Length: 185
Picture 1 (cartoon, rainbow, N blue to C red):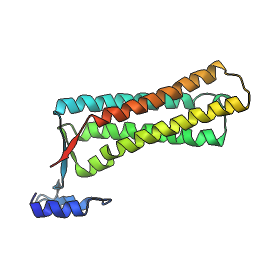
Picture 2 (tube, rainbow, N blue to C red):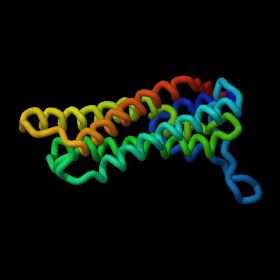
Picture 3 (cartoon, rainbow, N blue to C red):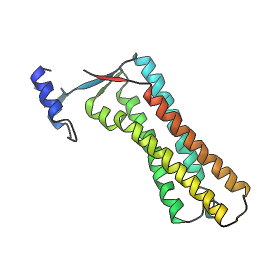
């Protein structure tokens, strides 16, 4: 890619669909000519790190799904618990989906810029929001338990442990994705 083309691409990067990065070939197909981000580690190390991210995000998603299968009496059908729990489910799935996408498209240690911006750049925010929403969900249920002078049942205790697991896994995910640095080529 020429220097002028790279500069033009950088000017139009933010929030664009990057269709200008694809150019038609003589055979009628399309070839990507946009910017590429390369991991500062080997392809094998990247694969190992992304696999770790997938396992962490998958475990967090599984814990959230299991917690969502508890009877309504445990988590309660209170709106101030259900809304953050729905956001928690969304962000666990988001981390899992984006990690799998990196694993599929970054096998050689590089990512196209639009994939990098849709995945890697969103990890810190989504992991932080997951931590916050899981904390709000667990905290709101604890506050409800204290204010209503309810009894701590075994199911509620297991549910709170699952929520704590999601919080810990989201913190671990954020640390795992911070270990990978990317450079634009």
